[in-house]
Length: 143
Length: 434
Ligand SMILES: Nc1ncnc2c1ncn2[C@@H]1O[C@H](COP(=O)(O)OP(=O)(O)OP(=O)(O)O)[C@@H](O)[C@H]1O
Ligand SMILES: [Mg+2]
Image (cartoon, rainbow over all chains, first blue to last red; front, side, top):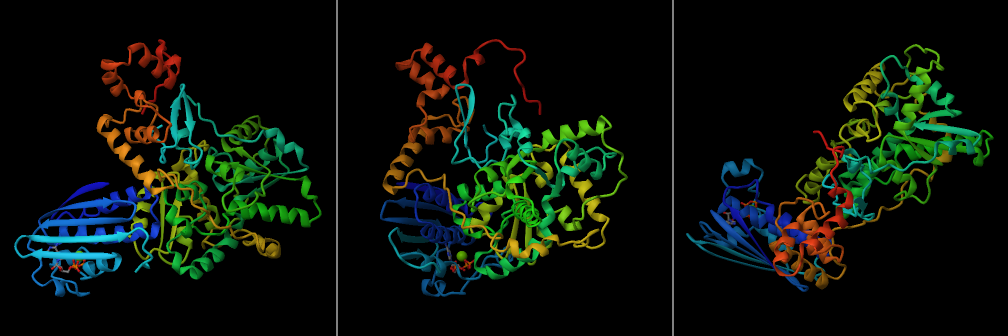
């Protein structure tokens, strides 16, 4: 089944809405709590990245009995050097964003660590696309 | 129906029905019920006379209920007049507990934040609504249970036969009654019964008004320490526990905060004091006095001491009976009682969720409650679980009338939900004045 959520750039108050909705859904579906936690953490970081770095975005969550696939698409500046952005600690966050407690440069690495499969692609000046897969039968340890 | 924080209430045939596995005994429904139809079960008062030693175990908030000119000493006298032989205070075990709690927190750094086990409604709330957090619950018995063990131990070691000891708790709330009748994390309860505080308030005040009680000058009889007196109030626990502690009262505030804890949005908190009632036990549903006044009164009592752990007498009575309490301080593991899942089997749960989603396209989303469920979503989930019908919705009835459902039938459905009486003229029907 499919769920869609919208994220508005700059709206940190509501960033986190998608992840808490998805948490509720997965609980109702009796998904293992360790897996829910990984999904929620990864999705939350993705949501915040859209709010922090892009203009707006759409999140699509696809659930079946095998896996949870999350696609995040945004309109934004894109990421010029993806390898660099994936480095733990790398951040271009503005002072304002840092003041709000974001901008440690741990978001993308955290998403990768919590997913069983992770894809990222970006076009500078257009936007960024993320694909996060968490397998329901996965035995990956929490990080 | 809508007051219920876990959506456990449904109206069927004009009566409120509780989903037992969702109910956390918080008493919010009792607080708002317009007809007084929801009652808090209690033991027959006469039961106390089945015992030779009839112990009234009173919470400190009881002494905060009475008018200014009634001193605690008079209340104790009145309790004895109505039949009790001994009066003890629940908070007697607080001084003994504080170091135990601190030690537990130090030993369980990986389970932070530790959630207090003090309020039984909160323990149940965590079980049904936050099953991931059950491991955070403090596995130490609350003062009520520990004090009861102490009293029983003390009396029996002084030669009173165990069968002669009847310990009766005077409760300010419904949650405590349920906790005693079906304790969580404990095999048995040391209490013999529970009596509601409103009943005791009425009887003792009657006794005092009849002038059967001597005027006793304003001395706070108990030998509780200052912090024991205020333990059941908001911040009673939190200010006395080491580390970063937070105190939150009111069931809806607690739910909001636990959502954040569950999402890992709050970090570095060591201990959470969570209470279901606004102003904690002073706001218990069976309390007679205004909760703010009660809280103020108790804080004033506590102020007579300079230090929080100071008392007029020996502060730690339980120390003497340490041996006896060993092995009685810990609670067993608390198990989750999740109400949220639609089905054990994920594939089936997904089918049900699809159906709920589809039903929500048709239900009006106004949450009027006419169907007997607290919200459109709750009705949709009931339907999917086989516990409700589409025809219970007045909006959908109108659509169905165009096809097959005749008005007579929809009338019958409404009668079935709300009872026949709702359709008669009644100028005395209970109306909630807000
Ligand atoms: N959706 C996006 N659009 C444009 N740039 C992005 C996007 N997501 C990440 N970036 C870039 O990648 C960098 C690293 O992202 P990452 O999430 O790891 O750290 P951060 O967001 O800066 O800080 P943190 O997530 O720890 O609060 C960001 O600073 C930003 O420059
Ligand atoms: Mg980020």
